[in-house]
Image (cartoon, rainbow, N blue to C red):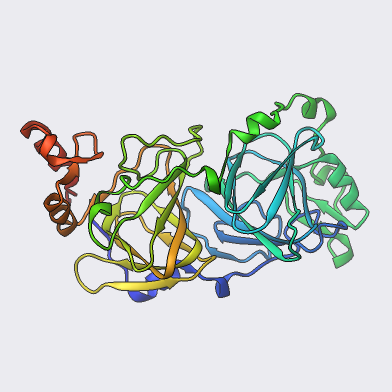
Length: 390
């Protein structure tokens, strides 16, 4: 494969810093309902499920998944709706009460930092129930390039009509009070029939709890990256959804259902780094704590960006990159396209330094001590370490 090289302008274009984020308060049909009118919707990568033609999308390039966020003050609610593809919530701050079921009859609360994945084809909603009177932020990862939109609970469609809000058959918002023309009933999105709602699968609180990983439940591994043994490196990985880039043969993700992407935590101590490596799959970083420096390119001029907390960074497939924690320790979430176990290729300098510390990869691509491998296994491991240029 041919590695790509980024210019400084291209590197900056792949960073969505806090000052680049543009919210939309008219993204959904419940935007004028009391208790929901103060929520702000963001589309960082892909349009997500927005129902507004005015929604700003920072990076429209297809990634195989969409990433957005909801910013909601204390007490504000996102009402019952269902998705057709995966929806993963990444709680950055605050405490949130999630509801699900035919009429939102099940409830559970999760506080930052936590990750929750809600099954497709069930109604769900959530409310900021933080003790602090602040605006909380929840990031979302949605499966697929085209999510197909969402279906709102019939009660929400009925309530919204009292405020002059409707949905067209193509799932876009119609605001009569803003001058939009209300089509004939045949041109409106029909509510889901009661018998169809009754046929949706029900998930218990216990089943939903198994689809969440709180901050305290993260299982950090110091063997997930080949370079972690090197001085000034020491990156740790905590898997959450699917098999990501971890090279620890003992790590098992808590959530293994296919999503079309993997989600895992990475953390670095201040001024420590993850050495130069390449992944053949497109990835997105969300910085949850501290600031992260991302430096691209192997041959030629390196280019870097500094991503402060809350930033989103799109990392192209087949690009060489390294990460460094700045301004204290850093925690970030890495979302990688695909359900397969991801392969990581390390720079030759990293491979040689690791070898000097008796570390390499076994024939299955996992970190191991080199001196316990027979010659045949060392040769096989060395072959999978190498990136072949075509």
